[in-house]
Length: 288
Image (cartoon, rainbow, N blue to C red):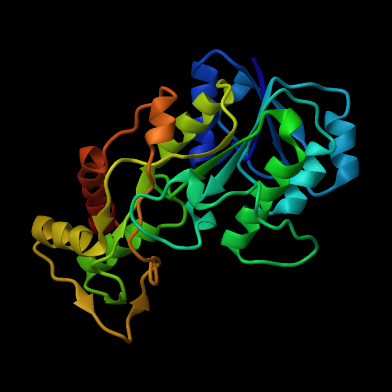
């Protein structure tokens, strides 16, 4: 299968490309040519500007792909300009749990219906609304591409360039004051390599519509910090004058993954791997 990937040179996009290659697919990555990758001669490369229609036409106009995996679509315009200049049999977009307007446990895909939501154009918007509009445009106007939208929670791993979870580990180890407003809220995550693998798996499937993808279970920041304290003998410092936690304001939520598992994918449990990740973060914060 010939697969085009947009957003495959860092973080879970790298895992997605590796998973596609491991599955025997022929992979082309499309980037702006500013970031080097480590795929060697295993992939073909295209240099494009995805917001420039002429760039897309010149690079993609005469080519057909069996599937396209798009990690970069932020809003409705991103979907439109790409799919108006693309010939493919299937389109998989990386979406987000942020499409759900009410964060709560066991969110099902029906909690946000992109087919009945009003599609709007030409306005700037925050992340969650941008992803809602991207899904709306995709499912209301481009069903011919057999589309799917993978809704992810927070993606974490050793390669997480945002350092969001690492923040709590490092500052606990170093005794730096932290301002955290949601210690008891239970948050859903997915490991970066599993997010990439699920996206690669989805490219070869036939289902359409939105689908949740997440590790099973949740964890609170209180549990994260307590684990670090126990492992290191350090004590976290909490202060309103401290640095704001990256997850501040996040309420408890989890994603129901029954649909994805009914289609044949099996997710890990958070408790299978999160302590190992925290251990590696502890080592990094001590050695750094």
